[in-house]
View 1 (cartoon, one colour):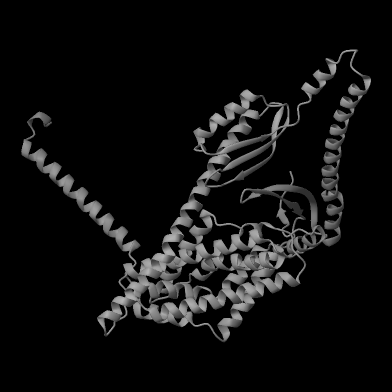
View 2 (cartoon, helix red, strand yellow):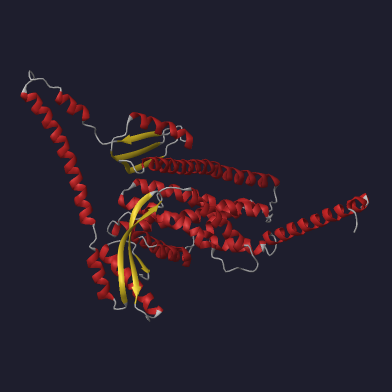
Length: 482
């Protein structure tokens, strides 16, 4: 056996040197593999890409009709709250071409292409707004569903979809061998629904929808063109040559001025959206903590409203149950700083406390007139009657909106004989910070029912109950009851 203490120093050094050399070779090989996987330069067809984008910038003939049809389809999808119909409109939308043209023109100093792209893009926007406005003006005013609400304001996720959709669009379009990716769908996701929502707001006179969707459309358009511009610069696409150096410098100044005028305000807008997103996240965490504190007490939050404002953001909560003391309210206000909400104003709406009025009545002496005490009692009674009337009206509204579950389950038996057992529930659905109910049917199919028949009857049930319940979305789920 060899004694470790007898190993020569140079042998130990050689072993360490080999280990280090092997480690360097491994990491170098790993880095080379990662670069090879993530490389964008291989397979790029610069001339073909530029020619393709220039061709897509054109807007006449069939492109105009395709835009018209896609706007109608998207408007119908927003009207009914159907995600599938909206996606169908995205598949045929031609809005992608001029936006990529703007990015290409800015990256290659092509002022003629920039002018043409902006002109055609403006024409597309005007046509889209006019057609969607006409549609929503003619059809009965739809209920404000989640699809419309989602396009009312710019959010961080919406901007991210626009940016990554634009990046996917230019990368997929620049390949010499085209892939099966359909980046236009992601781009249209960021453009088509907001444009149609602009028309909805204009047709119905709801200006918060009009300006909010227009704001969202503008910021999304910029963040779709941005990755195209960055990609063109990174891949060193050939820039336009000029015979006169002075004209070249003038064109470059025009392009850079245009890019600055568009990008600088856009980044300010993006910063505000980012701040609002952080505020909403912090506010949700703060309210979750308050609800945890109130859990298993006699008080609960029955309503909430989070309002972002750069100067004075606010959180308003309405409480029900036992009154909350001033000390608790002060504690909640001190907790705001723990969640990055130092500038936020907390508004707490509490049930009216009548203890002081009752005490005043008890303190009435015999010398005080009976009329005065009667007046005070009557004031309390009138106030309580108003509160009772308000609660009764709200209860009546809920009663009218309540769905007859037994009747619905009987209708299932009339629509199909293949259902063995069924259940109905109203699920609470949260999206974009707002709550809504989603009618849901759990259906157990008879043993041996063909999959095609199950799919056919599921579609039948969904369409039937969407119509009978007047709901844009109804969920039918296959379920086995134990």
